[in-house]
Length: 375
Image (cartoon, rainbow, N blue to C red; front, side):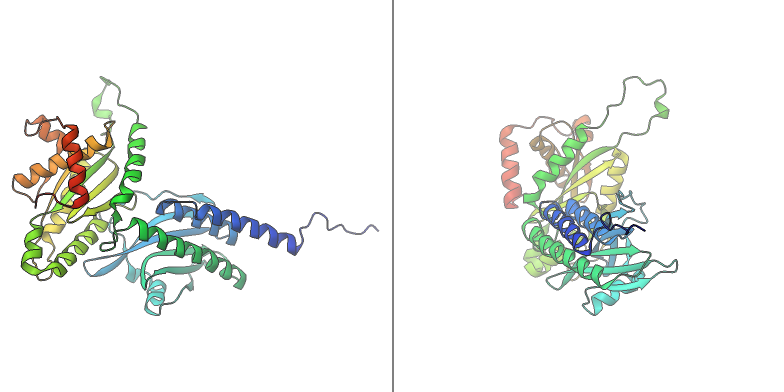
């Protein structure tokens, strides 16, 4: 009777070598990104392949009105990257962290992970990502079988690289006070969005039945300025001024989706890149943010308002598009403040000129960089 051959069955050493090669390949990909979203997807894909989990997700954690919320940022399910769906108005902020007791336990005990078994038998691991004693991101890994000690060590190793690399990205890309993206990261994000805008199909002329057409979804840029911010600093001091900036940043996070981008440009100025919504929805979203700020009670300071100018991201140059939103902002501030103004609408109504010179565009960028825009 012939002996059974083992030549088609890989040895333990061969499997370990294969795992190591796969791990190194993923680590190279993880550390090659300069974007948080791509970094998230690379880490999730690595964990899915290395551990065999059927679902891996990243969430952002942020504070809004003295409560912590979770909002999904990226996900890999059954080997496929699943896009983050546009949330409804009720879901926009995310889910209260109180819905996730295992994660709360981790944060209260400064633990690196906590496992739970759900009602349908899934084994779920929660991993808060600690950066300087703070947690702004967490991961959830789910699979039908219990996690082995070997797989836990592998996960911890990948997350250690993720944690360190995310810290480097945050240091270079985040505003140190508010945690929002900084001015330096704007150009690359803006270029991506402009490229996306150019890829949209145009609406055909004279369609047979306009009523059947859905409103066109576009990309939008808004410039936000806190009204009378200098008075806040002068009357209450810079500590309370900084608290106002932090609270406005928290409202910005809660008011926009994970796929949108919010930047602090310096001083009391913020810029928003809003993805793929109609003009009507864009106006509603910006107006809702403005109203939320107006209704918020700021400690010691009381009421604070913001002015917003926005423009569509078209085939114009970045300087022109940013300049259009800035012109609309200046109009809002010069005509009562605490309002949202749309550039094209102001031009159509004869309230703004559509001309913008190279000189004014250059001065605009100088003002933004130094935070010297009119209060």
